[in-house]
Image (tube, rainbow, N blue to C red; front, side, top):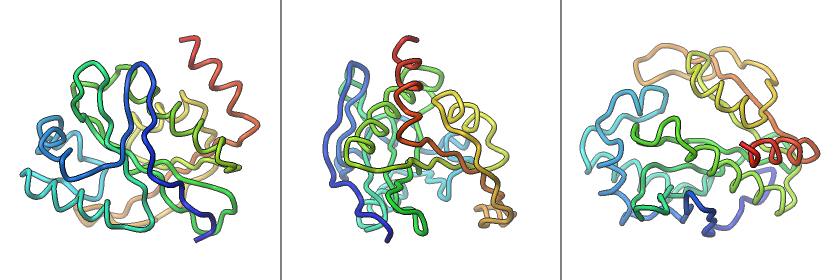
Length: 191
């Protein structure tokens, strides 16, 4: 591990509360996006039952390479997805934001931007130098969202890993440096 991962904390703004993921979130999470193939298309799991989603959540909670957060809508108090901080081997003072999904009902809303504002702010407040975001080369929706928040394309790692269907995934890497973030943050807050 190249950097100590952030401790699990609660972060919130007017739109979302990010709280450490627990098994208590699983029923809301399954209602938000469990069994929806479009939600899980680009992720390493595709749970079709609440029990399966619980197993994926438990694995993430117990994994010492991730700090998972439930994404809770402030308006409803219900979890609608999750996101994580992850270790970035080989990069000093860097942290990754990833393993993110949201239920379809909150796509194209303020949820993703609100989450990224909280997570990126927190990472830089803790002294990280760089935030990494990555996605499948075929996931254009995610690439556009990452670029919209300020992620700079850093390259594509070919045949990075296999997808659940057995095909090879090329992974597109984006980064945001600490000194770049204030400009992007101001732009996003003005939207």
